[in-house]
Image (cartoon, rainbow, N blue to C red; front, top):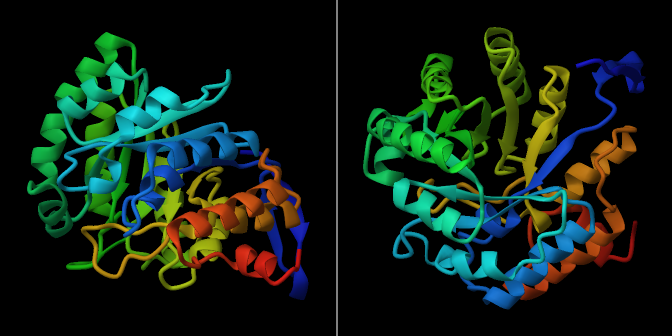
Length: 314
């Protein structure tokens, strides 16, 4: 994508896009690991407010087994009560055909199918190998196409696994090929446990973008080791302009030990705006929302901008 040159300190130059797209995943990936279970009304409040502050793409929850992820058991009700202004895309994660049917039943017509690039993580997360999971997804993709639904693919542990270490690019590439064979051309790469570093992100993104130029790539970072924003910069350098983030930096994977919060939406917005990159979000509004999120979950979160806001700074 064409960009412009920005000059930083020490003579550094970066090629930056004029705008990035941020999908708000706090209502799903942010809340799914919280001890405090929010009510339907509280979830609807957060979703409606994040849209008011500029979100055009929101992952509202997941249609999965409620026994496995109790925090997402009420996603159907949440979907029935959100406002749904024109131009906003609401998404949900599904694990199988039943989840896709639930999503369609409440008019959430954009579903995310997630498979792990790591066999060990896949077995602990879904009880099946990546190959078995992708086999089921082919049926889901056919159903979605028949019903006029949009389906995106997501690859978890795309950079590292809590059980196997660094995941080879070949394992990621294999899942990309399978998603493409289903007609899915929007794919996200998730640093599920926050082990990725800028060099690895840049290497994988450059290689995959070169090999699959028609894919719409999204990057999903966790800030476990404090590298999420640095990894975004590496992704920008590789030409990726779509990112997931969670309000207040909430999040974590129930099936990935040590996985802490997602990249905080307000931190990403702040960095982007500081570098002259538009996001469409209102930062001040997102800071107020982030403080509200902390109030609801009952604890402080991993968000640098909320620490600044709580101290009275800007």
